[in-house]
Length: 86
Image (cartoon, rainbow, N blue to C red; front, side):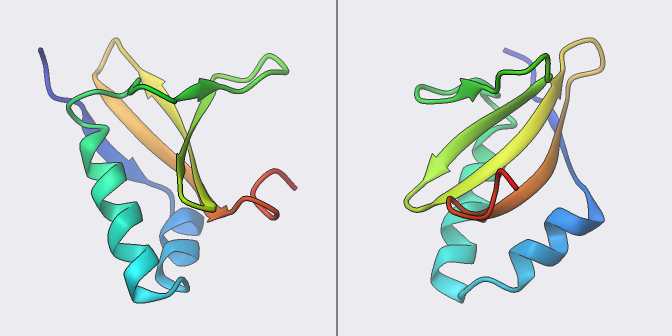
């Protein structure tokens, strides 16, 4: 299987840097795993005509888009589940 390139928006990187170190490490590990499988078990495609997907990492969520033509996973939002969908 082909490896996907991971890109992270500035806002997602900023959100990630504000999180506690232990949570940050788990989220980075989950994000890096998306390069091998951008649709892992438990990944959900968000409704509403959006091309966004999300994965759960404990109480936190990673929202991202997949471009299969150029093999890119673009991480768009990272945050606590109560704040992520605002």
